Image (cartoon, rainbow, N blue to C red; front, top):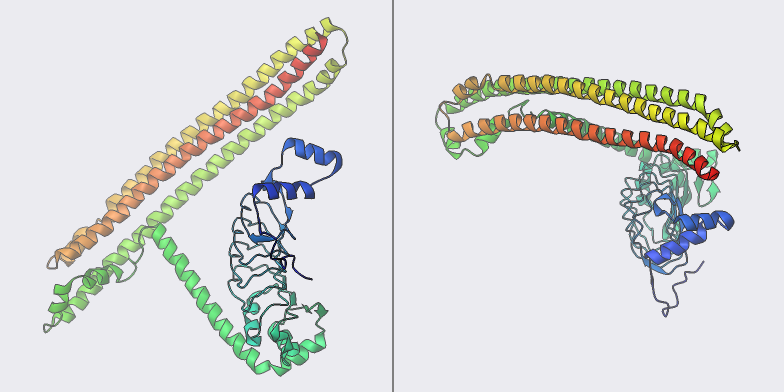
Length: 478
């Protein structure tokens, strides 16, 4: 298939609002459904399929509004670079075939992508695809892939079942037909042909030694990455507790790293032994601070968890009570409303509407009272939480450096720089703990204001619906 860009007289197109609106309309529903969609306006955030093929597009742009897009066709254009796709996080299917792309890039956020076509471009290397953990179908035929060993890069895609490499220089390698099934054992289709079991078995036997070594290296790398991940998680926990690097000699080492006078003293006979003992004692104190900091963080975390559970239960109980009120009202009055809709006697209708309005007003009052009860309940729960958490934080801060004299005595003959390091550590732990307290209390109040505003709006919308029904009945009689 040839690209529509061979004619140099054709000006490149830009993905602008006009093009997008035209294409969305063209691909939308037809007939009466299409007229309704057009009259109500097109919401780009709700579009799930967009076809922009054969548009002579040079640059991918202006697609940020299509946050629900799952399928995107950009084939048969003159695109030179993969870009502008970061906001399309729901994308499952992407076709960039028949373009002028030279490098795989710009796909980092497309973690849901399952089907990717880069057929007939100018790509010579597999790269920048690490985030595509769900990739199942990959078409990159008719490109410039020439290194057979580079196929190993694709081993990371454990769900990859279909691969098309036909038309690349690599497919001309005499080892190709056995190398791919051996090193990509989960693959089912290669170049649109099913890989039979016997081919896989022969391929594995041919490359057994190389695959065993590769698998061993991958296992070591996986373990190394897992170790790094656990260390990062642990460090993240320590940072959340404001005690990072206190579970060892980190603070001590940082003091001496900037103390040039101390390094001179270490040259004197017997000083190094003294410093080593000093380091042991200092590190023990830091370890106590570390342990206390983690315990304090755990206590605060449990208190917050308990609060959120109380708030959730209160909101759910209130919601269920509101549902029961509404259901009871509807069960009692829906038939009455239907009856009124068929009444022809205006006097009788008026006599029925009047008490119905009273019932609607009473429903509004009951729902609003229920909401006010919840507001009071949540306010009291939050106040109690504020008292408890403030006391916890206060006690934590009071005890945080209760052994500070021990630390100071340990370094009483040392440089002022050492004392400054200790003071800075204390300030950081105290300041961050207080900031955490302020932030969480402020968030609780902001969330409650938003919740209450939304709930009142819901109640008014529901009750106004019933009032409008009665207004409509009265209007018909006039």
